[in-house]
Image (cartoon, rainbow, N blue to C red; front, side, top):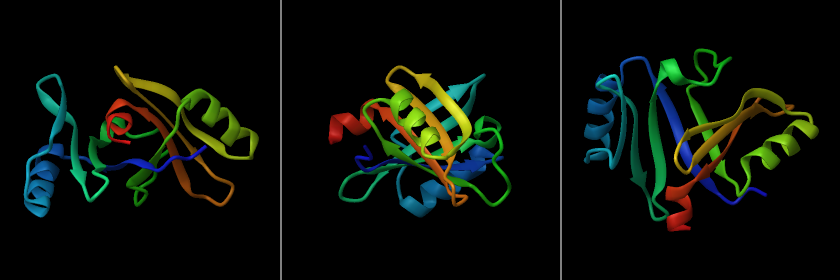
Length: 131
């Protein structure tokens, strides 16, 4: 069911400051940007041989129930977010965020596994174009 890491998403209360910091760290501007009300809401870079995506999301849009210190959600690429989410719940995971459409070609969901780890699943057209 899990095909590989799709996107590592980090959260920031000040996305403008985070963009500056990550752009300096990574040595390049984000390749993808989504704005809301004229301000950045989501930024994305590609990293490594597989061009794994590193996303920065405005903390206002973080999954419900996120606690301080739990700033990264690893999203695994799946073919069917609804089916993967249902399977994870059936295996004893606890819902954090149900399948949610983030835009054309992007659906995410997140759970906490029985051991307290956050696990995200995602349908992502960018990942599929590079798989």
